[in-house]
Amino acid sequence: MIFAHGFGCDQTMWRDVASAFENDFRIILFDHIGAGQSDLGAYDPAKYASLAGYAADVLEIGRALELEDAIFVGHSVSAMIGALADIEAPGMFTDLVMVGPSPCYIDDDGYVGGFSRDQVDELLEFLAENHLGWSAAMAPAIMGNPDKPELQERLTNSFCSTDPDIAREFARATFFSDNRDDLPRISARSLVLQCREDIIAPQVVGEYVHARVPNSEYRLLDA
Image (cartoon, rainbow, N blue to C red; front, side, top):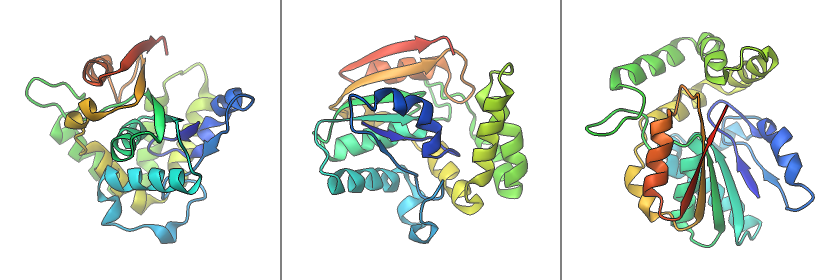
Protein backbone atom coordinates (compact mmCIF):
# COMPACT_ATOMS: atom_id res chain seq x y z
CA MET A 1 0.00 0.00 0.00
CA ILE A 2 1.30 3.41 -0.96
CA PHE A 3 -0.13 6.42 0.89
CA ALA A 4 -0.05 9.88 -0.72
CA HIS A 5 -0.79 12.96 1.37
CA GLY A 6 -2.83 16.00 0.40
CA PHE A 7 -1.90 19.65 -0.06
CA GLY A 8 -0.09 21.21 2.88
CA CYS A 9 0.53 17.86 4.55
CA ASP A 10 3.35 15.33 4.58
CA GLN A 11 3.70 11.60 5.09
CA THR A 12 3.42 11.85 8.89
CA MET A 13 -0.29 12.56 8.47
CA TRP A 14 -0.76 8.87 7.72
CA ARG A 15 0.90 7.49 10.86
CA ASP A 16 -2.35 6.62 12.64
CA VAL A 17 -3.83 5.07 9.49
CA ALA A 18 -0.92 3.28 7.84
CA SER A 19 0.08 1.56 11.05
CA ALA A 20 -3.23 -0.34 11.02
CA PHE A 21 -2.15 -2.13 7.82
CA GLU A 22 1.49 -2.88 8.64
CA ASN A 23 0.87 -6.51 9.59
CA ASP A 24 -0.77 -7.34 6.27
CA PHE A 25 0.87 -5.04 3.72
CA ARG A 26 4.18 -3.52 2.77
CA ILE A 27 3.65 0.16 3.54
CA ILE A 28 5.14 2.95 1.43
CA LEU A 29 5.09 6.57 2.60
CA PHE A 30 6.62 9.56 0.83
CA ASP A 31 6.60 13.35 0.75
CA HIS A 32 5.51 15.30 -2.30
CA ILE A 33 8.11 17.83 -3.39
CA GLY A 34 8.08 20.85 -1.06
CA ALA A 35 6.66 18.90 1.88
CA GLY A 36 8.24 17.13 4.83
CA GLN A 37 11.77 15.92 4.19
CA SER A 38 11.61 16.16 0.40
CA ASP A 39 14.60 17.46 -1.55
CA LEU A 40 13.69 21.05 -2.42
CA GLY A 41 16.54 21.13 -4.91
CA ALA A 42 14.63 18.66 -7.07
CA TYR A 43 11.81 21.13 -7.67
CA ASP A 44 11.20 21.96 -11.33
CA PRO A 45 8.58 24.71 -11.90
CA ALA A 46 7.73 23.44 -15.37
CA LYS A 47 7.30 19.81 -14.29
CA TYR A 48 5.13 20.65 -11.29
CA ALA A 49 2.95 23.23 -13.01
CA SER A 50 0.35 20.48 -13.35
CA LEU A 51 -0.63 17.38 -11.40
CA ALA A 52 0.98 15.25 -14.10
CA GLY A 53 4.38 16.10 -12.61
CA TYR A 54 3.33 14.73 -9.22
CA ALA A 55 1.87 11.62 -10.86
CA ALA A 56 5.23 11.10 -12.60
CA ASP A 57 6.88 11.04 -9.17
CA VAL A 58 4.44 8.38 -7.97
CA LEU A 59 5.28 6.27 -11.01
CA GLU A 60 9.00 6.77 -10.43
CA ILE A 61 8.59 5.48 -6.87
CA GLY A 62 6.51 2.57 -8.11
CA ARG A 63 9.03 1.54 -10.75
CA ALA A 64 11.97 1.90 -8.37
CA LEU A 65 10.23 -0.41 -5.90
CA GLU A 66 8.90 -2.68 -8.66
CA LEU A 67 5.31 -2.24 -7.55
CA GLU A 68 2.69 -4.41 -9.15
CA ASP A 69 -0.92 -4.96 -8.09
CA ALA A 70 -0.48 -2.40 -5.30
CA ILE A 71 -3.09 -0.32 -3.50
CA PHE A 72 -2.85 3.47 -3.79
CA VAL A 73 -4.43 5.58 -1.05
CA GLY A 74 -4.63 9.27 -1.97
CA HIS A 75 -5.99 12.10 0.13
CA SER A 76 -7.56 15.15 -1.50
CA VAL A 77 -5.49 16.25 -4.53
CA SER A 78 -3.47 13.04 -4.30
CA ALA A 79 -6.60 11.10 -5.21
CA MET A 80 -6.40 12.63 -8.69
CA ILE A 81 -2.62 12.23 -8.74
CA GLY A 82 -3.16 8.53 -8.14
CA ALA A 83 -5.79 8.42 -10.86
CA LEU A 84 -3.37 9.96 -13.36
CA ALA A 85 -0.71 7.45 -12.33
CA ASP A 86 -3.14 4.57 -12.85
CA ILE A 87 -4.05 5.82 -16.31
CA GLU A 88 -0.38 6.17 -17.24
CA ALA A 89 0.67 2.76 -15.88
CA PRO A 90 -2.26 0.31 -15.73
CA GLY A 91 -1.47 -2.65 -13.52
CA MET A 92 0.79 -0.90 -11.06
CA PHE A 93 -2.28 -0.39 -8.87
CA THR A 94 -5.20 -2.79 -8.61
CA ASP A 95 -7.07 -0.48 -6.25
CA LEU A 96 -7.39 3.24 -5.66
CA VAL A 97 -8.72 4.60 -2.38
CA MET A 98 -9.73 8.22 -2.92
CA VAL A 99 -10.18 10.17 0.30
CA GLY A 100 -12.08 13.40 -0.33
CA PRO A 101 -11.33 13.54 -4.07
CA SER A 102 -12.14 16.39 -6.41
CA PRO A 103 -11.56 16.32 -10.16
CA CYS A 104 -12.30 20.04 -10.50
CA TYR A 105 -12.62 22.62 -7.73
CA ILE A 106 -14.22 25.40 -9.77
CA ASP A 107 -17.94 25.48 -10.59
CA ASP A 108 -18.79 25.03 -14.26
CA ASP A 109 -21.95 24.78 -16.32
CA GLY A 110 -23.86 21.87 -14.82
CA TYR A 111 -21.01 21.04 -12.45
CA VAL A 112 -20.58 22.00 -8.81
CA GLY A 113 -16.96 22.02 -7.67
CA GLY A 114 -17.49 24.08 -4.54
CA PHE A 115 -15.66 27.27 -5.54
CA SER A 116 -16.09 30.10 -8.00
CA ARG A 117 -13.12 31.26 -10.07
CA ASP A 118 -13.03 34.49 -8.06
CA GLN A 119 -12.90 32.56 -4.78
CA VAL A 120 -9.95 30.50 -6.00
CA ASP A 121 -8.17 33.63 -7.21
CA GLU A 122 -8.67 35.24 -3.78
CA LEU A 123 -7.49 32.12 -1.98
CA LEU A 124 -4.29 31.95 -4.05
CA GLU A 125 -3.68 35.68 -3.67
CA PHE A 126 -3.98 35.37 0.13
CA LEU A 127 -1.60 32.40 0.09
CA ALA A 128 0.95 34.30 -2.00
CA GLU A 129 0.83 37.39 0.21
CA ASN A 130 0.85 35.72 3.62
CA HIS A 131 1.66 32.02 3.73
CA LEU A 132 1.64 31.79 7.53
CA GLY A 133 -1.54 33.81 7.86
CA TRP A 134 -3.24 31.70 5.21
CA SER A 135 -2.16 28.54 7.03
CA ALA A 136 -3.40 29.78 10.39
CA ALA A 137 -6.78 30.72 8.93
CA MET A 138 -7.39 27.81 6.58
CA ALA A 139 -6.08 24.78 8.47
CA PRO A 140 -8.57 24.93 11.38
CA ALA A 141 -11.45 25.53 8.96
CA ILE A 142 -10.43 22.58 6.79
CA MET A 143 -9.82 20.25 9.72
CA GLY A 144 -13.06 21.05 11.55
CA ASN A 145 -13.48 18.91 14.68
CA PRO A 146 -13.51 21.90 17.07
CA ASP A 147 -13.67 19.46 19.98
CA LYS A 148 -10.20 18.21 19.01
CA PRO A 149 -7.99 21.33 18.85
CA GLU A 150 -4.89 19.15 18.73
CA LEU A 151 -5.88 18.06 15.20
CA GLN A 152 -6.31 21.66 14.08
CA GLU A 153 -2.93 22.53 15.55
CA ARG A 154 -1.30 19.58 13.85
CA LEU A 155 -2.62 20.59 10.44
CA THR A 156 -1.74 24.25 10.98
CA ASN A 157 1.84 23.31 11.84
CA SER A 158 2.02 21.13 8.76
CA PHE A 159 0.75 23.92 6.51
CA CYS A 160 3.24 26.35 8.02
CA SER A 161 6.18 23.99 7.55
CA THR A 162 5.74 23.49 3.80
CA ASP A 163 7.97 25.48 1.51
CA PRO A 164 5.93 28.65 0.79
CA ASP A 165 7.01 29.09 -2.83
CA ILE A 166 6.36 25.47 -3.76
CA ALA A 167 3.13 25.46 -1.75
CA ARG A 168 1.88 28.44 -3.74
CA GLU A 169 2.54 26.70 -7.05
CA PHE A 170 1.15 23.37 -5.80
CA ALA A 171 -2.02 25.20 -4.78
CA ARG A 172 -2.27 26.72 -8.24
CA ALA A 173 -1.80 23.32 -9.90
CA THR A 174 -4.37 21.85 -7.52
CA PHE A 175 -7.18 24.39 -7.62
CA PHE A 176 -6.95 25.02 -11.37
CA SER A 177 -6.82 21.33 -12.23
CA ASP A 178 -9.63 19.74 -14.21
CA ASN A 179 -9.50 15.96 -14.38
CA ARG A 180 -13.17 15.30 -15.04
CA ASP A 181 -12.45 13.74 -18.43
CA ASP A 182 -9.86 11.43 -16.86
CA LEU A 183 -12.30 9.72 -14.48
CA PRO A 184 -13.79 7.25 -17.00
CA ARG A 185 -10.23 6.20 -17.95
CA ILE A 186 -9.39 4.85 -14.50
CA SER A 187 -8.94 1.09 -14.72
CA ALA A 188 -8.24 0.25 -11.06
CA ARG A 189 -11.05 -0.74 -8.74
CA SER A 190 -11.80 2.42 -6.77
CA LEU A 191 -13.25 3.35 -3.40
CA VAL A 192 -14.47 6.93 -2.97
CA LEU A 193 -14.45 7.99 0.69
CA GLN A 194 -16.45 11.19 1.13
CA CYS A 195 -16.67 13.13 4.40
CA ARG A 196 -20.12 14.40 5.30
CA GLU A 197 -18.67 17.80 6.19
CA ASP A 198 -15.87 18.87 3.84
CA ILE A 199 -15.40 22.53 2.95
CA ILE A 200 -13.01 21.67 0.10
CA ALA A 201 -14.83 18.79 -1.61
CA PRO A 202 -18.60 18.83 -0.89
CA GLN A 203 -20.72 15.68 -1.04
CA VAL A 204 -21.89 16.31 -4.57
CA VAL A 205 -18.28 16.15 -5.77
CA GLY A 206 -17.71 12.71 -4.27
CA GLU A 207 -20.94 11.52 -5.82
CA TYR A 208 -19.79 12.92 -9.17
CA VAL A 209 -16.50 11.02 -8.96
CA HIS A 210 -18.27 7.77 -8.09
CA ALA A 211 -20.72 8.17 -10.95
CA ARG A 212 -17.93 8.55 -13.51
CA VAL A 213 -15.29 6.11 -12.34
CA PRO A 214 -16.24 2.78 -13.97
CA ASN A 215 -15.49 0.28 -11.21
CA SER A 216 -16.05 2.30 -8.05
CA GLU A 217 -17.77 2.15 -4.69
CA TYR A 218 -18.87 5.13 -2.62
CA ARG A 219 -18.91 5.52 1.14
CA LEU A 220 -20.14 8.61 2.94
CA LEU A 221 -18.29 9.03 6.23
CA ASP A 222 -19.89 10.75 9.22
CA ALA A 223 -16.78 12.90 9.59
